[in-house]
Amino acid sequence: MSSTVHSLASTTRSRKILGTILVHLWLVLLAVTIVVPLLWMIIASFTAGKLLSGVSLIPDFSKFSLEHYIYLFTYKSQDGQPLPDFVASFLRSLEVAVLNTFVVVLFSTMAAYVFSRFRFKGRKPLLILLLLLQMFPSFMGMIALFLIFRSFGWLNQPLYFVTFYVASAVPYNVYLIRGYMRNIPMSLDEAARIDGASNLTVFFRIIFPLSVPILGFVAVNAFMQPWLDYIIPSQLLTPGKADTVALTIFRMTDPYETLIYNPMNFMAAGLLLTIPIVIVNLLSQRFIIYGMTSGADKG
Image 1 (cartoon, rainbow, N blue to C red):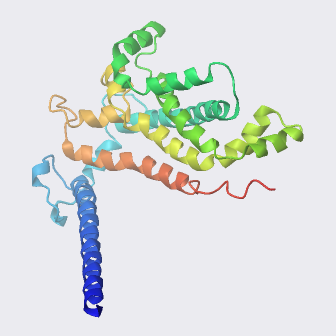
Image 2: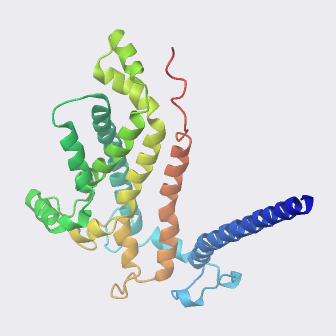
Image 3: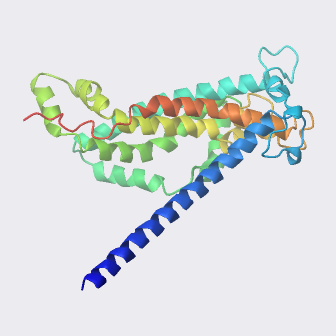
């Protein structure tokens, strides 16, 4: 009997060890998959020349150069323009991303507050409609979007892209934030209303602060949507005129763009492109605190 128990214990221990080894091997594989391309990208951005085929994972310090970064911060396709092409497109995309983040968070949160806190006629059909809108990819309406932008004179004006980004992001975020708000005790709203608070006061002074954890996630997604988008700008902007940063760096990989074609410049630009995303994630990380609302409801 004791030998059988010992055998079972030994088998269980062996399985745990094997499982641990497999998990660690999988984590190492994931780490290599992520780190190796990033490392190669960094090395390429500091290597002189144009050909990526000559870049290895082992740095060759004899080819070390800042020429690609110097190009990004100095090259101007037209005389007399105030800023270099990359810097201008970077700031242009940053403006769109920041505005989109603010509008998406505000609109989504207010709509989610209404759907989670109030009962009104047509509430369920509206929720179903929001869900149905997510079944169709946004680029299905590209032709209609182009015609609308042309009718309003918004072509080659990236700031107006926010109208499209907000319309495509709000339905999903409403469902996401609504689910979070439903876990916030209704007694907090009722206590505030007894003290004379209006719906807006309840929203901005109670619900909004308690929803900050989920809003941090929403803000990151809202920022990244226009920052990394290529499809919409490529259809609504004339190349070389009011380019977003995605269009600018894409042109660096197009062999037909003989004046700016340089994949090594693309690597340097790609690294600079990650800086705002890293900053936004770091700033939002401290807000993503699960269980923030626990204990908020006093008996």
